[in-house]
Length: 253
Image 1 (cartoon, rainbow, N blue to C red):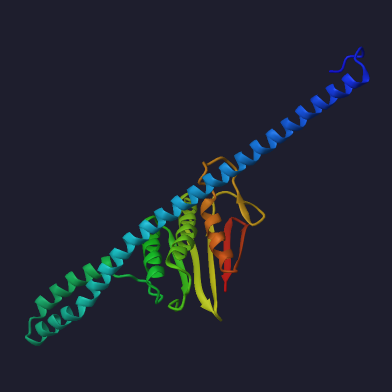
Image 2: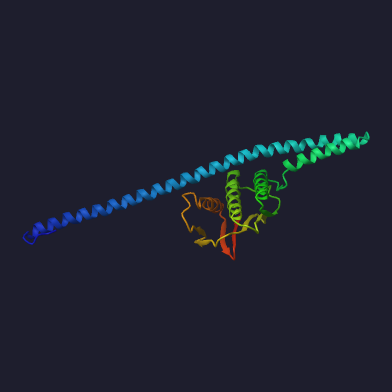
């Protein structure tokens, strides 16, 4: 405040002082805002890193299980030879009993899905089995993915997040639980899509899902990770909601 009794020089000095404090305050709040933004970004990156590490740990566990299955399947050649020997010796009943035991073991351990890519096989077989156990039908459109050049970690991020989201959405439904999944290599491009029904309409803005409620800091990070992998490889993705269905589609060169 400037008193009217002050001379011009004093009033000018007071004005400069007050203005200086005002500028300092503006700068202070600006730097505080920048610091908070950086802390928020650092926290988000830590969560992304943590989620990626958890997914890779799950992949390594699945890899061990898959390797065990491959060794078991390799042994079936010898077991078939044993069955042949029983039949040649007229031990039909023993052969039938042995086959019955083998088919029971095979149905539990054999991977139904084979794309020519070990990591894709592991994840899809696990998610297919998980879906079946939860009463969710998963339809698959696949081809030979042996030439897929995306890293193992990136495949885990893509498939793990997309299928986990679809399974979680279907679990909320009382009926019509279905996931339509496509992953094919066509003319040097990876075509990836996941379609599933949802219980409530999905709000989408700028190609991102907008949450209707606060579900914690992890909400939405999965799709952000997926988008990061796609953009890293120069690809594009589209998400949309239409008539009770959620659609995700991507093309990666």
